[in-house]
Length: 124
Image 1 (cartoon, one colour):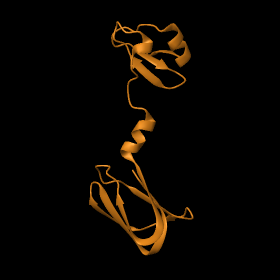
Image 2 (cartoon, one colour):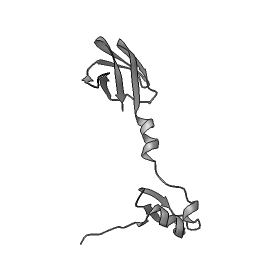
Image 3 (cartoon, one colour):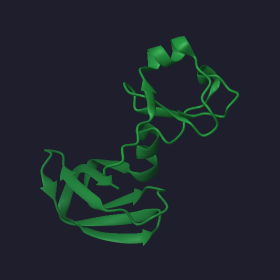
């Protein structure tokens, strides 16, 4: 026998209009925004904070873009991500290119090329 778990759900507008008080630990889902709130038993919906991390807030924490405007055979990238990221490199014409990547620290790397190029390095 399959077990189905269904969260209390509605649109953001309906949640705001009805403004219910969720039970302690009860999860309410906005089906049009994919945001959730967790009930406290005595706080109405409109006064509850959203739970979790918004994707727009998360991306800058785990990714970084470095634009090299002037052509150079060595790019120095200070990303301050706190880890050794994977690196994808594209020249100014948006062609994927390869370079020798050296992770100098968890917040700094260099990329060396056989000739001077400009472009963008995407780190994640």
